[in-house]
Image 1 (cartoon, rainbow, N blue to C red):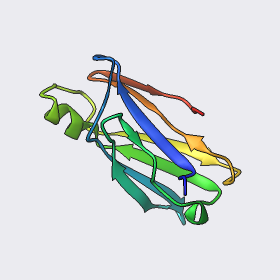
Image 2: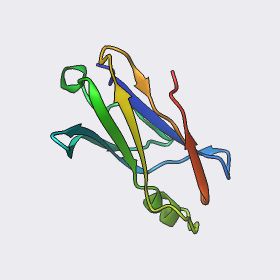
Image 3: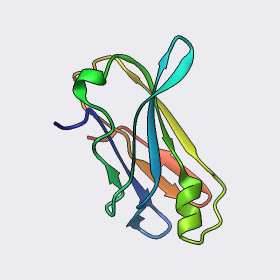
Length: 113
């Protein structure tokens, strides 16, 4: 079963996927973030199995990327030890692809397909 939330990381300083980055998916409930899924990026920089459809619901969600782990693995000095992307889900039946474009001193994101 395909996860309704997927992600990938591209290191824009090298033009290569960022492998081995720990990723945590969390949901905001009752004013507190709760872990709902986790994984690490594969050799293509992707995580495709964060959560199952029956665990996914409307609300605020957050993906936390442990980018400091990646920078340490690659011997790179980075400014951001982690990146958190918060997004709103109104229709949990939709697919949400949340990519991260990363370099040692900046990052950006967008809703992918």
